[in-house]
Length: 108
Image (cartoon, rainbow, N blue to C red; front, side, top):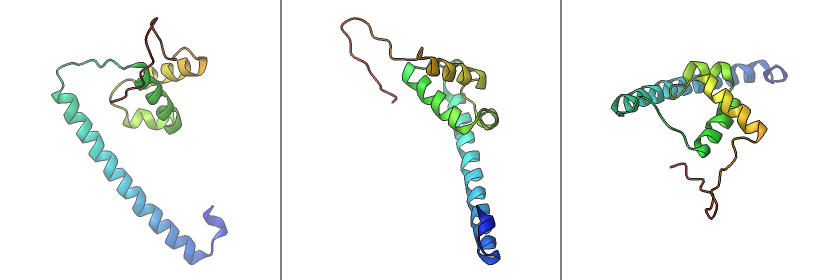
């Protein structure tokens, strides 16, 4: 992508991208610290995830990439997200309905 640009524009683009990466790494460090704080405050050591959250984590985890997810994930094992992603692809992680009820996609 940058190879097609003139040299001075390439330097400018590389500088902007490097600065943006630095900001993103700082944000990530903050979010990891914040997440660690919340985990310490919660009484339960084990989380339970609704089907909606499993689908959401499976999708964003796959989009991020499993290797990168291993570096930043704290709420569950990466293998768990991979299993959820596999279930999502097979259609097993659909919405389970009891008779006479409606689907709830509440993530909050």
